[in-house]
Image (cartoon, rainbow, N blue to C red; front, top):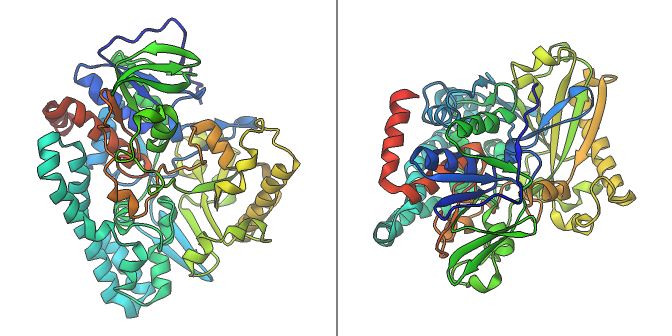
Amino acid sequence: MVEKSYKKFTEDIVFEDDTYVIIGSGVGGLTTAVFLAKAGKKVVVLEQHYTPGGFTHTFKRRKGLVWDVGVHYVGNMKEGSGLRRIFNYLSGNRLEWDAMGDPYDVAYIGDRRFEFVAGKENFREKFYEYFPNDKPAIAKYLELLEKSTKKNLLYFAQKAFPGLLSITLGPIFRRIQRPISNKTTYEVLSSITDNQELIAVLCAQCGNYGLSPKESSFASHCIVINHFMEGGYYPRGGANRIHETIIENLETLGVPVYIKANVEKIVTKGKSVKALMINGKEYSCKKVISNAGARNTFLNLLDPSVIKKKHIDFKKVKSSTCHLCLYVGMNKSDLDLNLPKYNIWWYEDKDTDSILNDRDNLTQDHLSFAYISFPSAKDSMWSKEHSDQSTIQLIGRAWYPDFKEYEDEPWLNRGDTYDQIKEDFKRKGLQLLYQLFPQLEGHIIHAEVSTPVSTRKFSKYQEGEIYGVTHAPERYKTRVLRPRTHIKGLYLTGQDITLVGVGGAMGSGILTSTTIIKWNMSKQFKEIAANY
């Protein structure tokens, strides 16, 4: 793996008044940068971390072991699909994908094992086998998923409408989506079946949007499940190839991406953007696009004096879930250890809500929930440089209040109690891995744990959240999660504008770009359709 070097932000940099300065180099920010640059706009991207990419970046440990931090798989990447074409456009055809095959996900619910396979009819056939007495409910579920697509598209499209259209058509489009966004996933599923095991399996992938069935909006559930209905894909060469290839394309477009550019404040004058406070110094700037998260932007980057209650109320729109992650490295290949490409959703029993909301899970002697991913097995390029190594990640849910006391402690030196929490999670995580894959015994050469305060440090999400704002019904009731803000010159992009994940973040970049360059986006869509 070739180490990439990126430009560091320096004090002598000057932003012209017509330059769009993007805060954050995650997929939302990078997507926005490409579309604006292609439309002839001046663009600069700033990243506070020492490496760009947001949750697409990877990190390395001894002997070259590498793990991704957020991208475990992506859906809708079949050759010729719309999402694949757009990523080809963003990366200049540099980004390649590996299909995970079937199954792409496996759910363990108690003592039963369920496979998720690509294709709607294949899904139907599998679930008919698992639940032969619930065929009408399964058919109804698939019908609801299909009907949700147009409703959700209309909801997101209206976020980019200019003034008059927003006033006239916006309420109509939101009203069309409301029946699925205002209800929880459990409310909808329990209306079509009373089989709690079936509901648990249909919701097994709910970790992809971070909420249990009784908490999540059914609209969020539909979007994520539909996204993976045609299977899972992984970036060839690792998750970092997503941002690397897009940044390579941005370089050809004359767009600089600067690292170690810590934006501390968006300075305003009246109701307009005036400047950015970066690394302790003020830089004049008129146009800003924040990819730093909606809550972070409004609650931390803007002065409270410019925020009015009618504009934002994050007491109603809360942050999403936190997690603990165990990173494991082995001294044998995936092939030698017979490790799968598919992801595992492991639940102790079918009571998904109780398991995912069990605050005592950290103190129990075993894990009741885990998500397990095998990044090295999913990447066809891995074995070329790591012939005798492999990697695993195991994720569990966490709550930020349990870690808040450690947030101001120095990284890698937060005290014995904090270290013991990590050690306990590592022990329980390894215990589960040995239970599922006993062949790992004697081959683990590295294991470490990250916590919500680790996420806070590197992503600047203040509560250690990984999915931005919550994917509960209240997300869809607010009017502030849209590209245009009430402050002149300030726009938002990123997963909060659309939905969680690489696909959601990319979609947000399209919405934000459309908001800014309006009908000129049609030229870019025609180019994508014709050439990618």
